[in-house]
Length: 329
Image 1 (cartoon, rainbow, N blue to C red):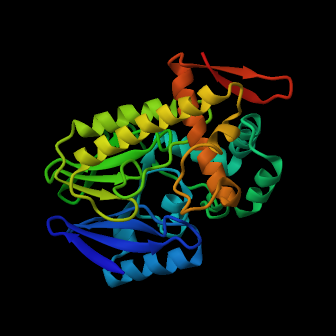
Image 2: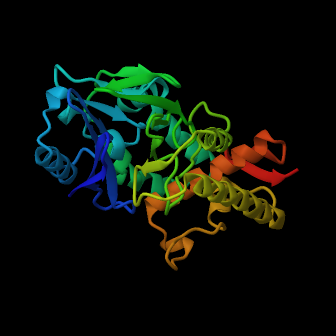
């Protein structure tokens, strides 16, 4: 399905299905100008995504040789299909930070380090083992390394007569990048700001405070003059400023709830704490929570624990069994 969502420049949304994923769809955006086009994000590396994306591009009569690609971040639902779209004549843009991290995922030992980190946070071995086979982030990632033009904060992309600015917004991923068209006051927010779900903020390798980074990134975006926001998933919202306030309040409440959990019992792992937090589980208890959702919930809890630890609100001790235990100071 293809939808015209902006008239000048011509901007279309292609709905890319995400099977077996609670996000359901990716919004892949296409900017069309007289001389050059730009695709923003691709979908998982799986046939259902490829069929929808190529079908949309065919409907728009786009030539890939005249169409560049911008990837908002390293998650597989946003970059998985990239190798199906590259040609000798088009360019791929991505933040330098996320590209380097993605290479570590594809050919390095990032996943091994992440699994070890989650184990130290109390994540059960049996669930981690099952996730090795079912993890969409690994299964549907790009199948090989691809070349990119690495972007830093406020680097510019020119597509025809449309100038876009990359805005580094770390948090959801270390190098997440939004795209801003200042002339039209349009923001492509990727997964930095979503309107009807809250972006997952996990703990990242070599990042001490992902949540703190995310909060500062929200404040950065709030300073921009934005009239229209096109998010990476779900529906397009009206006021990004109201949504940012809502997300900030959500994390404030999450931090308060975490401290309340710790106030009832000291010396708990992140996994134990996560099991007592409030999640949108559609009435299911923690034991009925799917494995991948337990992973996301634990990662989210870890990022909030990191935030509190960096601000000297809690203490963190590695016990004799090599598990990190958290307590209120």
